Image (cartoon, rainbow, N blue to C red; front, side):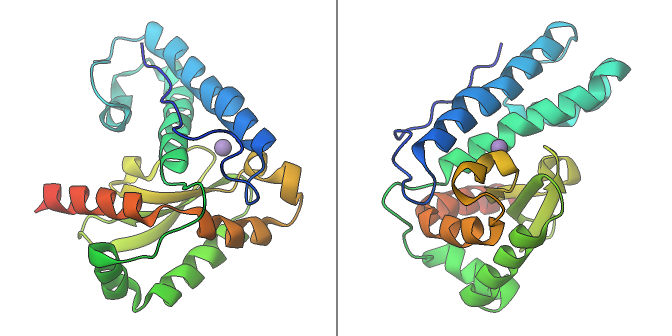
Length: 206
Ligand code: MN3
């Protein structure tokens, strides 16, 4: 069935922003567990599993009724964590430049305004969930949050950047200080990867 994507840096590569133990548990236990549970559900349903997960998630209507909730939770868990680990950069962020900068300025007014809104949403989201930078159906950038493991793909958005605000993402180091985690997190985002995703998806939509 589906296999978990490897992360292409070591568990300690995001220190000091995210500690090695947190990255290790997050990827090898939490992320892996969503994949295992998803495969268990797919084994007893007949879906086209040759598709990428980002397309498969839209086939939820084809599942047995009793598996629909578990399917959305676990496939969202895999997709969201794939993006999360993909957009992080050992050694720290690069600048927001090029087409991504233009898109952000068009949708939010300025990079500072975007960072401020993203930080606020991620710091104040209640309970467990995610905050995303997405391309909305009008091909503009937007910030959306989801609860639990829901992916915004289910609502017609294309996510290109994300922060995981489940406590398992930061609790060992930050405990209750989620705003500190959020502020530091913005310093390890690989904006070149985010820009590449932005360019690919905008091109596809034209
Ligand atoms: Mn997580």
